[in-house]
Amino acid sequence: MFERMRPTDVPEVTILVDGRPVSARAGDTVAVALLASGIAAFRVNAADGALRGPYCLMGICQECRIGIDGNSAVPACTTQVADGMRVTLGPRPADG
Image 1 (cartoon, helix red, strand yellow):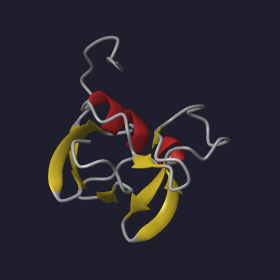
Image 2: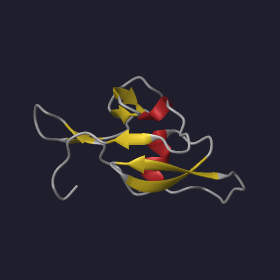
Image 3: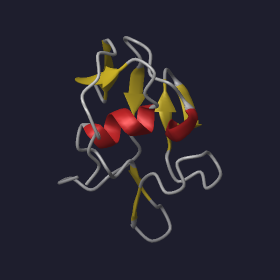
């Protein structure tokens, strides 16, 4: 799983993921904040039910598209967190 390499003195911000508060570091991308909080599956592929999440982490593959502040299909890997940001994960399995 994803783990941060070293501590930092970067200030923390709080984003809301499906209504739940998640701590992130200022300057993190949404994908990094989610991965660091233990969320690896961002959505389920509608065609085959496969779990989807970040793959390339540079905005090319579009596997990490989620809802951010009311906009759908935003790439989480290229969007920086902001305090109070509202993130909506795509459909996921009930245990997900």
